[in-house]
Every structure is written in structure tokens, then in C-alpha cells.
Image 1 (tube, protein in one colour):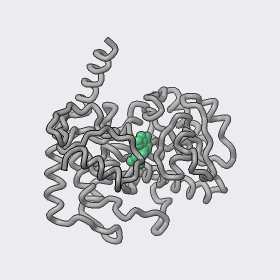
Image 2: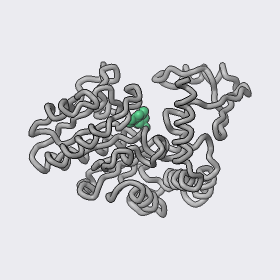
Image 3: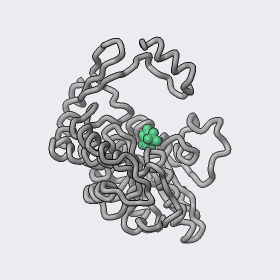
Length: 319
Ligand SMILES: Cc1ncc(COP(=O)(O)O)c(C=O)c1O
């Protein structure tokens, strides 16, 4: 098949939910990708923040390949060898608690929303979640509602109840929005889709104090900022506080789909058997890839490299 034929096949059989560049990518290695016509590209767009290690990182490829020969799917009715290991790795690199595995960022955020509501409803009909203007949390019904951008919500009404929006980086706005129905505050520490807006240290610290004072759950959506992207393993580390819940996806699987919802000790056992699930969540193949990502970040000192490259790019781009 040539490029034209592949595109024609998409046009006929694939729902047109994306505005695609008319290029068929067939191969990737490190910083480079190749298209069906043999053109080579330097990939400045690592798949919506997924390919943090570059394409087909050898550690990820080898880990996945060797596990594929053993078993591909293990249902969550059983245990597999890697899910607990990956959870331990995430916890050891973040804060004390437990992990729920799923397949995407939206799904991780859905899990966080459900956990928050479950805790809130049990402690006095508290279900409202405050999120930020210009946020982005995913494309499911609950997460487009958490996403305070009308363009993602329009046409999909009625939206789920219980979300309130405030200006980002404005602690007074949050304080004013809290009612006796509020259970959580959810935000990206650096807004991605909203335009690379960085939460100030004072703001995050004040949010932590506010949540402690009012028994509210502080949810960090680290789907974009997590797994080394900001020069720390997780962005919350820049602020000297820990969130109560952190959601991850994107770069976590080195290109394979995996999502995770990490809850601190206090909230780690709210969701009981039967309350939440995901068929493919924490599959050994996805976990093998994510474990290889952690290993690569550590062994290849990629966090310090991220800082160095970030400074270099900033300086040159500013010039
Ligand atoms: C901050 C943030 N949260 C959640 C999501 C949704 O992730 P997914 O597309 O894996 O559902 C995204 C995707 O761009 C995101 O940037």
C-alpha cells in the first residue's frame, strides 16, 4: 500500500475524530521516525508527551519482547508477576500509598474522581470537585466536565454534575468556591493543553494547607508532567509537598498504553473489590514496559539530562 491508499482506507473505515497530517509513520528509533515514502524526520512531537524515552527504547523493546513469550494477558482475577513490582516502583519514587492501574490518562482521572466521590459521599454527601480554567483531564464524559474548556464539552450535554471551575494560580478563587459539598481540588501542576501555565510554589503550598484544613483531597493530574518530563520523576517534587492522589499515563509505558492512579495511604483503601476495575489494567506487558522506563530513567541519568536539555532549549529558543 502507498500513502494515498492508506489514507483512503482510513477515510472509509476509521472515524474522523482527528485532523491528521497526511504522513504514514512506519518506523521509529530514538529521536527519528520514517514514513512510508522513506522520508526521515527528527521527531519534535513525541506523540502527545508519550515517547519521553524516544522511539523504541531498547530497554522497553527487550522487556516487552521477553515477556510476550511468557504470557500476554493475565486477568485481574489473578495476580501477575509485574503489577505489584511496578506499583512498588511508583510508590518508592513518589509517596506512601497504593496504585490502581488502567490504560489511559482519562481513565486514571476517572478513577481519581470516583475515589474522591466515594470518600466524600461516605463523609457527608460531599461530591463537588473544583478544577481549573484552561485545564485538560481527558475525553470521557466525567473528564471533559473536569476539563474547564467549553470546546471539549459542547454537544455532549447533559454533563455530569458536581464540577466547579476557578482561575488557575488564584488561591482566593479556590477558597471562595469551596462549599460544604466540596470534596476535592484537581489540577495539572503545569497546564499542558491550556498553554504551558506553571502553578506557582506559593499557590501549590497554599492548596495543600487548604486541603488539610478542610479535609479535601488534592488531586494532581500528572498525566503530562509525570515520569521525568520536568526534570524530576514527578512534578509535585518541585513544590515540596505531596498530593493525595496523582494520576499518570502517557510516558509511563514508553509507548505502550498504561495509566495509573496513585493514592496516598489515607485514601489507598477507599475503593474496595467490585467498586472499580479495568480489564487490561496492569497487564504484564504494559507493566514490563513501564518498569523498563523507570530503569532507563535511572540508569541513563535521564532526569539530569532533562534539566540540561531543558535549559539549553530555553536559552536557544529565547535567542
Ligand atoms: C493533563 C492530561 N490529563 C489527561 C489526559 C488524557 O489522557 P489520555 O488521552 O491518555 O486519556 C491528557 C491528554 O492529553 C492530559 O494532557
